[in-house]
Amino acid sequence: MNREPKSDFAASAQHLAELRLLHLADSALPIGSFAHSFGLESLVAAGMLTVSDLLNFMAGHLQEAGVLEAVGCREAFWLVGRDDQKFSAVGWIELNDRLSALKPARESRAASGALGRNFLQAAIALGDFPALCEAGDASLKSHSLIHHAAAFGLVSAVLGFDENRATLAYLHQMTAGLVSACQRLLPIGQNEATRILWNLKPVIAETSAFSATCTLQSVTSFTPLPDWGAMEHPALRTRLFIS
Image (tube, rainbow, N blue to C red; front, side, top):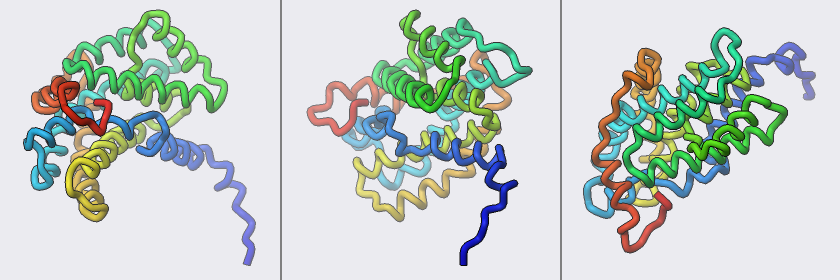
């Protein structure tokens, strides 16, 4: 039996925004995230990360690096998402440069920049978005990295997504990407990976909520093991990942 779609549902801006956010937050979005482990490959190779450690490791990573990423996402959102203020290219560059300074490992810093650049370019191709084009041009001229969290926050604001939903979505795709990397590095099946990601959802929610109380001037992130892993990554004899 055929049913006519309800016009109010089909035309709902909220539902359309939800669908677009799901699309852009998909960890399978072709921006290159599949090629990065952010130092996890080195930790596995050194025997410092095992299947039994993974849930606790990922929870701790969210509470440190996740908070930093979430704050970067929110502050990029605020560049256009509060009080209808005009996009500030200077603020955009300063935000990304500060994120660069807070990422001590070169490989992870470069990986974040590569994903951010690819994500912004993918979003620019979806429509006419002057603020996104201005951000891309400003970063190119200043030779500044475009970090993934910042790009996600900026795009979310321009497309009219809710700030909290966007931050949750970013953290979820970040976590899903790392769990996926571990599936290729460790003996983890689909069911176990699903269970781990499911059990991390409360930590994702807590991390997102906490990030709303921080700024990039106040946030701290202490991740010695992933940073060490990223710094050691170029020295691995064999590598599955770029970072």
